[in-house]
Length: 132
Image 1: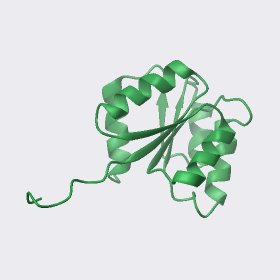
Image 2: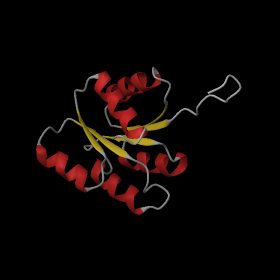
Image 3: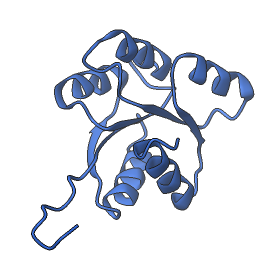
Image 4: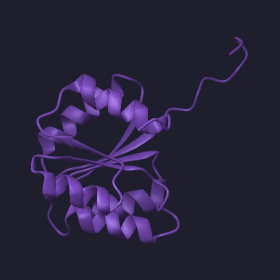
């Protein structure tokens, strides 16, 4: 990049989780690396924000009010305007059944809570650069 080039556009990440503390922590971690962050506290809000802003990545909790993360994932994938957005699940569910279901529903990764900030950032970067 020469000194006259425009800086790279910041990536927009939607964080959807009904736990405000988790949303705040993830937002702080992502913003520290220059990412822009949208926040949703339930499944319906996540869908609306995804349709409106078409983020580069969605970090989605499974257990949320209104509709769970798997239902959000299914609806994102059937909508042509959101079907190409990569979605990584962030969940306290640690069993293989939740991970398998998430991948079958179209998630590109599964991050278990509690997570390490370096692990989160590595997975986000890998997904956004096509290595995830």
